[in-house]
Length: 451
Image (cartoon, rainbow, N blue to C red):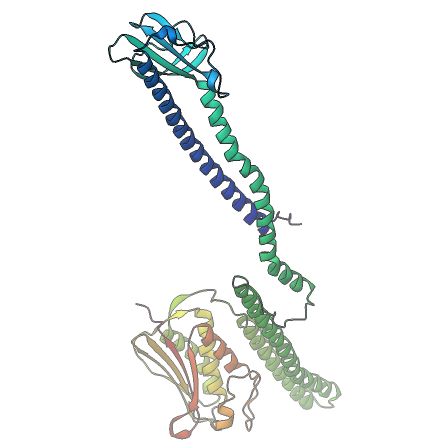
């Protein structure tokens, strides 16, 4: 028992990549926005530090003792995170904010720097007054900046947490709605009766589903034709086999009831002839059944059609001589054809055998093979009674035999020729022989010569 292979839903195949793409894009955009916002916030806060330092530099020219830092009001929640120091000659702390440490905030004397004082991280801006007497340092706690950046990041991620589930539901609904025709189509095919090969209705289907339905309809049509062919083939075969079997049975009954050895021998000879006829019919039926499936050739090799015709003529020549029919094969250069050698031999044999069997004694059967460019033409011409225009159009149909002849046959030889030619991309032509006597069958192979 074959283990069932787990199948992945189309909805899941669409939903997971779409949500992953949306979430990934959003996260990437949020990360870029966060980094950009943090950079701009830092620039803004750095500008604030530089501006505050400039104000203190301006105040440093006045009496520093007049500035009261102990009772300064806290106007903002982040105000206590900002500190300043004023150092005289860079060595003596003259003035500082209430939250500033007693040691220098930074060893840098100009510009921005990042330092750690008493276990706390600071962002510091340092500058001298114009007389280079006082060193002013304004600093801000780094954790304040981190808190602002964190707040920005959370504000960027919160919409993602809400939007992704909503987008997931919307995408799932859209995908479910979009794949509904596939589900409907699958259910319709599953509920169908095995005998129902009518085309599926393609009206209202999406453009992506319509080719699938068209392919299914073509498959249904091929299956329908195949089933009809099998039924017709079985019916025709049963009908054709009934005649030789009935004849053999009748001759066997005659032989059993015969009162003389001569009569019994004659009945047995006729029974054997009927068995040969039935065997030939079965062989032709098996050959035709093997050719019926619409499939590529099992083998595709370069064959010399002239050499093949020469071999077939040599095999059939004794039978032709026994019927007093002359068999002629025109000589010439090799005529290579690409195809299955065994099937091509059957094609040539059926044509030559058919011509010999329907030719009266004292006549000639000509076999010709002509090669011109990429085209090879096989012709078999007999001098038999000929075929009427009405019957000429029906040659090649299964079980069709020309009326007005005593020659027995299955009516499948030319059908087999037609099918083999079709498999090799060749065309079969039926026309009256020279001077409107007999029959000329031509098989034209185009573009099949070896380079």
